[in-house]
Length: 339
Image (cartoon, rainbow, N blue to C red):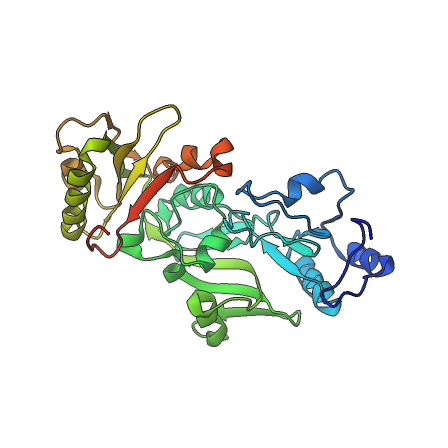
């Protein structure tokens, strides 16, 4: 059996004419291991995942997704769905099956009057924020700009605006979903509400979400935030301060603490914050974060919301994505105690 042989979960071989019919039904590419673009297309952000699908359907729109779902169902083929490709355990790719790749579906439409936005499932937060910030709007959307909106939303979604506006999924108004029988449904509080409940934390494997509609909020273009770092020897003091600070902070303030090891440097304890309220109040809110003696790094102050969204990017890029975690982040959205 060669690498080009496609085998269903049942063990049956899927014949070439069926694959060719599938290829002609797509507007996007259908990649196989011998194709030049295959190696790049199968790779994920987590470089430790090394799986080889038999087929990668690079969808350009909902019609391609429907064709891919129908093909996988009719032939009993193992299937994975890729949005931004940030699934750390590697759920975005499979061995020997079909990857439904949504990364080329990047349409975004912002309605500034209604403060809503609809975005396709291949969009990343850097794309989404670029469009919404043109109108001074944003939604809760992660802490790394390269993350895909699809996986983050369906996984809950914790970000810089969570203390004020909740998780990403709390801001989801509706979703377009291709179900296992190849139908396109809209899920919302009023349309297919059971499916909407499922997408918002009720489970998984309900279908392939092709687009998301979000509630937006007035945020930016400038916020008060950034980071401040102290020597590791002060970790106990800093984390205790962090616990008290987050309990008393206003809802507009989302704060994280972390132990970081920069390349070639010593481990430090750092505080990261974003205050999304009025700028004239932001300095007073974040000032206590730099009050624990002499910080070894102080980058607190006003900054563009787009820059705030990219604070963690450098730690999530490059060869370190192939290694064990370089930072331990303490997330405190409930304003509780440090673990």
